[in-house]
View 1 (cartoon, rainbow, N blue to C red):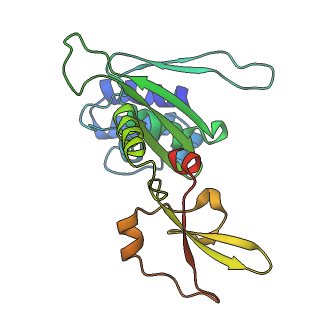
View 2 (tube, rainbow, N blue to C red; view 1 turned 180 degrees about the horizontal axis):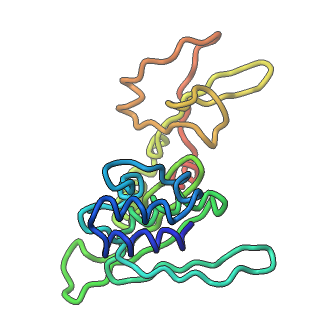
Length: 215
């Protein structure tokens, strides 16, 4: 699918006529059409939804795909000086389901050293979605925890429900009560404003363990 995505970008960079684009879209095959269903006048609309600037479709990087190993797995490298981090993450999430979960790091590189343009970050991609983390947020959180380390609520709260059969269940805004790993973490203000769901017993707020919330 990544090889087809590279071809799609080359097509969009060199072909402008809608009819020719439709023919090129069809030529990429059924699998491409299943992952990126035809949309819009040139059929590439679903694919262009990944790109930050659809008028100038680019991921800002080269994609190097190695030959598959004996188990059919391929190592892929994204490299470049103007990598569109979010676009690459969306492409992996959409087109590389068999590779999930996966993650990658990125870094700023500046000729002129200016405040706010250092550091980098990482992206964690799972079947549930994409999480973006950057070093500035990590630093802010680390210093906040250091200053407020005596406050057990520094890492937030989870809403827990006691159940005689299943033990504790934890609230997730999208899925309701379930396991701790999927729990929604609330700040103190968010918890104070949250309207607790009606359940067979009264849900209670628990302070979030630091390692879990920080991850």
